[in-house]
Image (tube, rainbow, N blue to C red; front, side, top):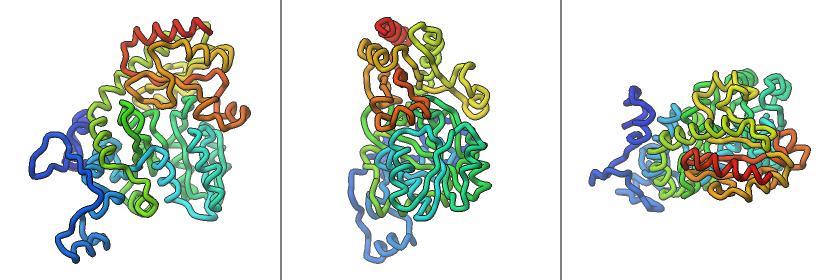
Length: 396
C-alpha cells in the first residue's frame, strides 16, 4: 500500500496499513530489521547502489526497511511526497535547517520557539556565518521587515511551546516565497491530525516523534517531511554524511505508535477541552490558554488553519514561581516531566526547565511567566484529572 494508491482511505485506516513492506513470511505486524548493513549479490550491485543507479539498501545509517515503513506512513499521514526519519526531534530541526543554509545566508524565525530550536538559529548558526533575525510570530509585518536579500529560510512553531501562540502559516509562507525563501514549520503541538502546514504553503514540516507519535514514553525519534525534491536535495545528503539517523528499533516502536495516534490524540484533546473549560475561571489561575476555546486571542486564525484544539494547556498560576511549584508538588496523579504528548498526564515549569537559559526579559517576550505551567493531557479519566488539578490549585 502506497500513499498514492489509496487516496480514498481515511486517516485512521492509513495509520494502520500504510507503508507495509512484508517479507516472504507474510507477517502481520511490521518486521523489525535489526541490521547495520546489507549483503550485495555481486560487486556490480554494490557499485550501482552507491551511485544511486539502483534502488535498495546499503547501510542503516542511510535507511532501513523498518525506517522506510515509518517514513512512508508519516508521508501519507502528512500528505507529503517524502519523509526522512531522524534520531530525535531536535535532530529533525537541525538537519532540516542546516541543510538549507550556508555561510552568508540569513534565517528569520519566530521568537517563541522551543529553547533548543531557538539555540540552533540564535547561537549555532552565527558560528558558521549564518545570520538570524527573531520576530514576533503573529505579526506578519514583522516577518516582512526582517527579510534581507540573503534570507533563505523561515522557521516557526505553531502552536508555540509553551505559550500556545498561533502563527498564520499561509501568511508567513506567502512572505517567505515572495522573498525566495522556504518555510519550515514545527507542527508537534498540533499533531498531523489537526494541522497541515504543507497544504497551507509550508515547504517543510518537522516533528519530534518522541511526543504524540510514540505517545507512550518509550523512545526518541524525529521526522522531516516535504516535497521529494526538498528531502532529496536539502535533507538526505546532510543526514547521511553527519549521521543523526534513527535506529530501526525506534522506527518500529513509532510505527506501532502511529496505529493508535488518532484514538489517543482525539481522546486527549477532548479531555483537554473539558479541563480548560472547567479551570478557566478558577480563582488560583491568572490566565488559561487553550487553542480549542473561543476566548483564545487568535481563535479566528485557529478556526481557519486547525481542525482541532490540542492536547496542551498553558496555566498561569497565581503567586508566580512559588505558586507554580506549590501547585505542581501537590499533584498526585499528574507527574512532573519535561516530556509531552504521553499517555500519562505531565506538567512542567518552562521558566526553570525547557526555557531556563533565557533571561526573564526574553522569557517575557515569549509569553513565559514565572507562574506558567505547561500541562500535557494524557489518557486518564477526565474526572480524576480534574480532581487532582483542583486539589493541587487549593495549595496555591
